[in-house]
Length: 353
Image (cartoon, rainbow, N blue to C red):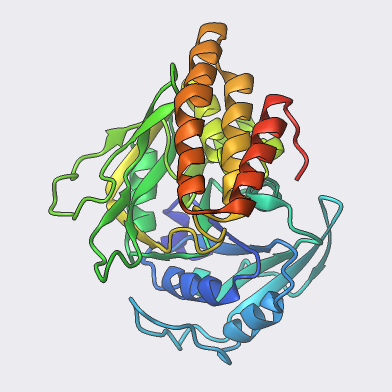
């Protein structure tokens, strides 16, 4: 480790991939452009079946170039040294490759190869456990369908270090492409009304004209970009794997604030997100099922008796009928089946994936 790296807290950047190598290598290329000197990229492949592992390895050798929309290709850090780690039954059992510690951040990558698709929660948990074991001060969860600004991590860490009880820091998230624009905000953090579980998402669909320029304390930041302090993870635990995907970051943030930690959204840390590309979008059967089921799981797990009653009534009488009407209007027969299956499983607290 260089003297410059030693001055900055160490960060493991976890990028979860599942059948999305083209997005992943574009994301990685943007990460390797950042100006933060002390990080290590940890790619967790969630049992992909599209040759993702081989494609990602070819990228590290400079044999595949990502489709570049926001940044120039960086050739001087190739080849990137890769440490491959095998996962079996939730345990990391075998490593292939040399010790990466002497190498600069932009010249190395850890590639964890999961034996199957564990979803967002358990897939990231495997990466988090690896990172904690290696002694990192912070863990950054970064969606594979994002592109990052050069100084985003520097700004995230700077804000996390500013107060002892700040446990989670989120970025300003722009749409990757909003009707041809790249300056439209998707998320700047969310506050919840726990009596009906409706959220106020700051900056949503607004053109960024500098109106959101101050750090804001919020109830939740998006799982697409979450910087987690090591002490927070040690205190509140990992992501709840019952969720599989969706609502798991809301649950994690709720546990963080309930334990006395602050969550802040930092507008000077910016990324761009290809919303829905990793899950098939908001009308996919996958999305419909888990968003329906997991809303109910969150209510039953976390809220007090009165909040459970009011949030459940709101969901059954207002939120779900609205979702149902949209599916009927768009003639989504399979989506309707996914909705009712999610509703049934959520009410009986099924956690089957």
